[in-house]
Image 1 (cartoon, rainbow, N blue to C red):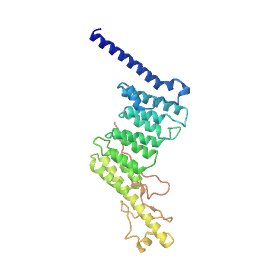
Image 2 (image 1 turned 135 degrees about the horizontal axis):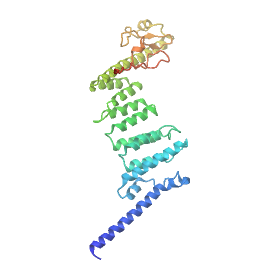
Image 3 (image 1 turned 45 degrees about the vertical axis):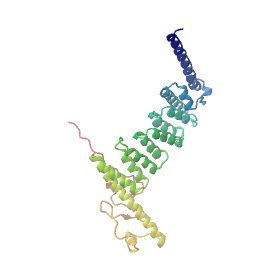
Image 4 (image 1 turned 30 degrees about the vertical axis):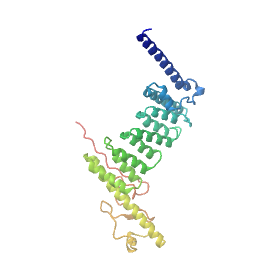
Length: 311
Protein backbone atom coordinates (compact mmCIF):
# COMPACT_ATOMS: atom_id res chain seq x y z
CA UNK A 1 0.00 0.00 0.00
CA UNK A 2 1.42 3.34 -1.04
CA UNK A 3 2.11 6.08 1.47
CA UNK A 4 -0.60 8.24 -0.11
CA UNK A 5 -3.18 5.47 0.20
CA UNK A 6 -2.21 4.75 3.79
CA UNK A 7 -2.64 8.43 4.63
CA UNK A 8 -6.07 8.45 3.01
CA UNK A 9 -7.16 5.34 4.94
CA UNK A 10 -5.94 6.77 8.24
CA UNK A 11 -7.75 10.04 7.51
CA UNK A 12 -10.96 8.17 6.64
CA UNK A 13 -10.80 6.04 9.80
CA UNK A 14 -10.16 9.16 11.89
CA UNK A 15 -13.09 10.92 10.25
CA UNK A 16 -15.42 7.97 10.85
CA UNK A 17 -14.31 7.72 14.47
CA UNK A 18 -14.84 11.45 14.94
CA UNK A 19 -18.32 11.21 13.43
CA UNK A 20 -19.18 8.28 15.67
CA UNK A 21 -17.90 10.13 18.72
CA UNK A 22 -19.89 13.22 17.77
CA UNK A 23 -23.05 11.13 17.33
CA UNK A 24 -22.56 9.48 20.73
CA UNK A 25 -21.97 12.84 22.35
CA UNK A 26 -25.06 14.43 20.78
CA UNK A 27 -27.10 11.36 21.76
CA UNK A 28 -25.92 11.79 25.35
CA UNK A 29 -26.94 15.44 25.26
CA UNK A 30 -30.24 14.90 23.49
CA UNK A 31 -31.16 11.68 25.28
CA UNK A 32 -32.86 13.25 28.32
CA UNK A 33 -35.13 15.34 26.10
CA UNK A 34 -36.26 12.42 23.96
CA UNK A 35 -37.75 10.60 26.91
CA UNK A 36 -40.14 12.55 29.10
CA UNK A 37 -39.42 10.24 32.01
CA UNK A 38 -35.75 11.26 31.86
CA UNK A 39 -36.44 14.98 31.50
CA UNK A 40 -34.90 15.82 34.86
CA UNK A 41 -31.70 13.93 34.11
CA UNK A 42 -28.59 15.59 32.76
CA UNK A 43 -26.20 12.86 31.72
CA UNK A 44 -23.17 14.99 30.88
CA UNK A 45 -22.60 17.61 33.58
CA UNK A 46 -18.86 18.11 33.14
CA UNK A 47 -17.82 20.91 30.80
CA UNK A 48 -14.27 19.50 30.77
CA UNK A 49 -15.49 16.14 29.52
CA UNK A 50 -17.59 17.84 26.87
CA UNK A 51 -14.65 19.96 25.77
CA UNK A 52 -12.54 16.83 25.22
CA UNK A 53 -15.39 15.19 23.31
CA UNK A 54 -16.20 18.25 21.22
CA UNK A 55 -13.27 17.85 18.80
CA UNK A 56 -12.78 21.60 18.97
CA UNK A 57 -16.43 22.52 18.43
CA UNK A 58 -17.00 23.91 21.91
CA UNK A 59 -18.86 26.91 20.52
CA UNK A 60 -21.35 24.65 18.79
CA UNK A 61 -21.82 22.63 21.97
CA UNK A 62 -22.35 25.82 23.95
CA UNK A 63 -25.10 26.81 21.52
CA UNK A 64 -26.70 23.39 21.93
CA UNK A 65 -26.66 23.61 25.72
CA UNK A 66 -27.94 27.18 25.59
CA UNK A 67 -30.82 26.02 23.39
CA UNK A 68 -31.53 23.23 25.86
CA UNK A 69 -31.54 25.73 28.73
CA UNK A 70 -34.06 27.95 26.94
CA UNK A 71 -36.25 24.95 26.07
CA UNK A 72 -36.07 23.62 29.60
CA UNK A 73 -37.01 26.97 31.15
CA UNK A 74 -39.84 27.46 28.65
CA UNK A 75 -41.33 24.06 29.38
CA UNK A 76 -41.11 24.44 33.16
CA UNK A 77 -42.44 27.98 33.00
CA UNK A 78 -45.39 26.80 30.88
CA UNK A 79 -46.19 24.24 33.58
CA UNK A 80 -45.98 26.92 36.34
CA UNK A 81 -43.26 24.79 37.87
CA UNK A 82 -41.56 25.60 41.15
CA UNK A 83 -38.63 23.28 40.45
CA UNK A 84 -35.99 24.26 37.91
CA UNK A 85 -33.35 21.77 39.02
CA UNK A 86 -31.52 21.60 35.70
CA UNK A 87 -31.49 25.28 34.83
CA UNK A 88 -28.36 26.35 36.73
CA UNK A 89 -26.32 23.29 35.60
CA UNK A 90 -27.32 23.87 31.98
CA UNK A 91 -26.28 27.51 32.18
CA UNK A 92 -23.03 26.66 33.95
CA UNK A 93 -22.07 24.19 31.23
CA UNK A 94 -23.10 26.63 28.50
CA UNK A 95 -20.93 29.44 29.80
CA UNK A 96 -17.99 27.20 30.62
CA UNK A 97 -18.02 25.92 27.05
CA UNK A 98 -18.25 29.45 25.67
CA UNK A 99 -17.54 32.17 28.26
CA UNK A 100 -18.25 34.86 25.65
CA UNK A 101 -21.82 33.77 24.91
CA UNK A 102 -23.32 36.98 26.31
CA UNK A 103 -27.05 36.16 25.89
CA UNK A 104 -26.59 33.21 28.24
CA UNK A 105 -25.66 35.62 31.04
CA UNK A 106 -28.33 38.24 30.38
CA UNK A 107 -31.28 35.95 29.78
CA UNK A 108 -29.97 33.19 32.01
CA UNK A 109 -29.91 35.56 35.00
CA UNK A 110 -33.46 36.63 34.17
CA UNK A 111 -34.49 32.97 34.16
CA UNK A 112 -32.76 32.18 37.44
CA UNK A 113 -33.47 35.16 39.69
CA UNK A 114 -37.27 35.80 39.82
CA UNK A 115 -39.38 33.75 42.19
CA UNK A 116 -41.49 30.88 40.77
CA UNK A 117 -43.48 30.70 38.61
CA UNK A 118 -41.79 33.63 36.85
CA UNK A 119 -38.37 32.14 37.37
CA UNK A 120 -36.33 29.64 39.31
CA UNK A 121 -36.08 31.72 42.49
CA UNK A 122 -32.28 31.35 42.56
CA UNK A 123 -30.86 34.90 42.80
CA UNK A 124 -27.55 33.63 44.20
CA UNK A 125 -27.11 31.39 41.16
CA UNK A 126 -27.94 34.38 38.95
CA UNK A 127 -25.29 36.46 40.72
CA UNK A 128 -22.71 33.70 40.29
CA UNK A 129 -23.56 33.45 36.60
CA UNK A 130 -23.12 37.17 35.95
CA UNK A 131 -19.95 37.32 38.07
CA UNK A 132 -18.53 34.53 35.91
CA UNK A 133 -19.50 36.52 32.83
CA UNK A 134 -17.77 39.67 34.12
CA UNK A 135 -14.66 37.69 34.98
CA UNK A 136 -14.38 36.50 31.37
CA UNK A 137 -15.77 39.67 29.72
CA UNK A 138 -14.55 42.47 32.00
CA UNK A 139 -14.98 45.23 29.41
CA UNK A 140 -18.61 44.61 28.47
CA UNK A 141 -20.79 47.23 30.16
CA UNK A 142 -23.97 45.21 29.57
CA UNK A 143 -22.94 42.63 32.16
CA UNK A 144 -22.49 45.33 34.81
CA UNK A 145 -25.92 46.64 33.85
CA UNK A 146 -27.38 43.15 34.33
CA UNK A 147 -25.62 42.85 37.68
CA UNK A 148 -26.90 46.22 38.89
CA UNK A 149 -30.40 45.44 37.65
CA UNK A 150 -30.35 42.13 39.54
CA UNK A 151 -29.27 43.78 42.78
CA UNK A 152 -31.92 46.46 42.32
CA UNK A 153 -34.96 44.43 41.29
CA UNK A 154 -34.51 41.09 43.02
CA UNK A 155 -32.26 41.69 46.02
CA UNK A 156 -33.19 45.31 46.84
CA UNK A 157 -29.52 46.00 47.59
CA UNK A 158 -29.26 49.54 46.27
CA UNK A 159 -25.68 50.11 47.42
CA UNK A 160 -24.40 47.08 45.48
CA UNK A 161 -26.56 48.06 42.52
CA UNK A 162 -24.92 51.49 42.56
CA UNK A 163 -21.46 49.91 42.68
CA UNK A 164 -22.25 47.64 39.71
CA UNK A 165 -23.57 50.52 37.60
CA UNK A 166 -20.58 52.66 38.60
CA UNK A 167 -18.10 49.99 37.53
CA UNK A 168 -19.88 49.72 34.21
CA UNK A 169 -19.88 53.50 33.78
CA UNK A 170 -16.08 53.59 34.16
CA UNK A 171 -15.42 51.28 31.20
CA UNK A 172 -13.82 52.70 28.04
CA UNK A 173 -16.95 51.76 26.06
CA UNK A 174 -20.18 52.15 28.01
CA UNK A 175 -23.70 53.55 27.95
CA UNK A 176 -24.09 57.16 29.03
CA UNK A 177 -26.97 56.23 31.34
CA UNK A 178 -24.86 53.92 33.50
CA UNK A 179 -23.55 56.82 35.58
CA UNK A 180 -27.11 58.11 36.00
CA UNK A 181 -28.29 54.70 37.23
CA UNK A 182 -25.31 54.51 39.60
CA UNK A 183 -26.15 57.90 41.08
CA UNK A 184 -29.83 57.06 41.48
CA UNK A 185 -29.05 53.80 43.25
CA UNK A 186 -26.57 55.48 45.59
CA UNK A 187 -29.16 58.14 46.43
CA UNK A 188 -31.79 55.45 46.96
CA UNK A 189 -29.40 53.66 49.32
CA UNK A 190 -28.89 56.83 51.35
CA UNK A 191 -25.22 57.11 50.36
CA UNK A 192 -25.33 60.87 49.98
CA UNK A 193 -21.60 61.49 49.41
CA UNK A 194 -21.38 58.77 46.76
CA UNK A 195 -24.54 59.95 45.02
CA UNK A 196 -23.34 63.56 45.05
CA UNK A 197 -20.02 62.57 43.52
CA UNK A 198 -21.73 60.53 40.81
CA UNK A 199 -24.23 63.26 39.89
CA UNK A 200 -21.45 65.83 39.69
CA UNK A 201 -19.44 63.49 37.50
CA UNK A 202 -22.49 63.00 35.26
CA UNK A 203 -22.90 66.75 34.92
CA UNK A 204 -19.23 67.41 34.19
CA UNK A 205 -18.76 64.56 31.72
CA UNK A 206 -21.89 65.10 29.67
CA UNK A 207 -22.36 67.58 26.85
CA UNK A 208 -26.09 66.87 26.55
CA UNK A 209 -28.09 69.76 28.12
CA UNK A 210 -30.96 67.52 29.19
CA UNK A 211 -28.61 65.15 31.02
CA UNK A 212 -26.85 68.06 32.68
CA UNK A 213 -30.18 69.54 33.81
CA UNK A 214 -31.26 66.14 35.09
CA UNK A 215 -28.04 65.95 37.12
CA UNK A 216 -28.65 69.43 38.57
CA UNK A 217 -32.21 68.49 39.60
CA UNK A 218 -30.95 65.33 41.28
CA UNK A 219 -28.25 67.24 43.13
CA UNK A 220 -30.94 69.59 44.49
CA UNK A 221 -33.09 66.59 45.44
CA UNK A 222 -30.10 64.99 47.11
CA UNK A 223 -29.60 68.12 49.23
CA UNK A 224 -33.26 67.99 50.30
CA UNK A 225 -33.10 64.30 51.18
CA UNK A 226 -29.95 64.87 53.23
CA UNK A 227 -31.35 67.99 54.95
CA UNK A 228 -34.59 66.24 55.88
CA UNK A 229 -32.72 63.20 57.20
CA UNK A 230 -30.50 65.38 59.40
CA UNK A 231 -33.38 67.52 60.65
CA UNK A 232 -35.47 64.51 61.57
CA UNK A 233 -32.47 63.08 63.46
CA UNK A 234 -32.23 66.39 65.35
CA UNK A 235 -35.93 66.22 66.19
CA UNK A 236 -35.40 62.69 67.54
CA UNK A 237 -32.49 63.85 69.75
CA UNK A 238 -34.59 66.75 71.05
CA UNK A 239 -37.40 64.35 71.95
CA UNK A 240 -34.94 62.03 73.68
CA UNK A 241 -33.58 64.89 75.81
CA UNK A 242 -36.81 66.79 76.50
CA UNK A 243 -39.29 63.95 76.56
CA UNK A 244 -41.51 65.68 73.99
CA UNK A 245 -41.46 66.82 70.40
CA UNK A 246 -40.45 70.41 69.59
CA UNK A 247 -43.39 72.67 68.78
CA UNK A 248 -41.43 74.60 66.14
CA UNK A 249 -38.01 75.14 64.65
CA UNK A 250 -37.55 77.92 67.23
CA UNK A 251 -37.58 75.27 69.97
CA UNK A 252 -34.69 73.53 68.22
CA UNK A 253 -32.79 76.82 67.90
CA UNK A 254 -33.30 77.75 71.57
CA UNK A 255 -32.11 74.28 72.62
CA UNK A 256 -28.92 74.75 70.59
CA UNK A 257 -29.67 72.10 67.98
CA UNK A 258 -29.88 74.61 65.13
CA UNK A 259 -27.92 77.78 64.36
CA UNK A 260 -30.63 79.35 62.24
CA UNK A 261 -33.67 78.61 60.14
CA UNK A 262 -32.87 75.79 57.69
CA UNK A 263 -33.90 76.53 54.09
CA UNK A 264 -34.51 74.22 51.17
CA UNK A 265 -32.73 74.78 47.79
CA UNK A 266 -35.57 77.07 46.65
CA UNK A 267 -35.06 79.33 49.67
CA UNK A 268 -38.16 78.23 51.60
CA UNK A 269 -37.92 77.23 55.29
CA UNK A 270 -38.42 73.55 56.03
CA UNK A 271 -41.65 72.85 57.92
CA UNK A 272 -41.77 70.93 61.21
CA UNK A 273 -44.97 68.88 61.37
CA UNK A 274 -46.85 67.99 64.58
CA UNK A 275 -45.67 64.37 64.43
CA UNK A 276 -42.01 65.36 64.12
CA UNK A 277 -41.71 64.89 60.38
CA UNK A 278 -40.03 67.47 58.18
CA UNK A 279 -41.70 68.63 54.98
CA UNK A 280 -40.80 71.05 52.21
CA UNK A 281 -43.20 73.88 51.42
CA UNK A 282 -43.34 73.43 47.64
CA UNK A 283 -42.70 69.76 46.82
CA UNK A 284 -44.02 70.05 43.25
CA UNK A 285 -41.02 72.20 42.29
CA UNK A 286 -38.37 70.01 43.89
CA UNK A 287 -38.12 67.14 41.46
CA UNK A 288 -36.93 63.66 42.42
CA UNK A 289 -36.98 64.25 46.19
CA UNK A 290 -37.85 61.17 48.22
CA UNK A 291 -37.99 62.84 51.65
CA UNK A 292 -39.87 65.87 52.93
CA UNK A 293 -43.02 64.89 51.05
CA UNK A 294 -46.55 64.83 52.46
CA UNK A 295 -47.68 61.27 53.34
CA UNK A 296 -48.66 59.27 50.27
CA UNK A 297 -47.14 61.68 47.74
CA UNK A 298 -44.87 60.18 45.08
CA UNK A 299 -41.55 61.85 44.21
CA UNK A 300 -42.39 64.68 41.79
CA UNK A 301 -41.04 64.43 38.26
CA UNK A 302 -40.18 67.29 35.90
CA UNK A 303 -42.70 67.94 33.15
CA UNK A 304 -42.00 66.20 29.88
CA UNK A 305 -40.88 68.36 27.01
CA UNK A 306 -43.59 68.94 24.46
CA UNK A 307 -42.62 67.79 21.00
CA UNK A 308 -43.24 70.35 18.28
CA UNK A 309 -46.20 69.49 16.10
CA UNK A 310 -45.92 69.64 12.35
CA UNK A 311 -48.41 71.69 10.35
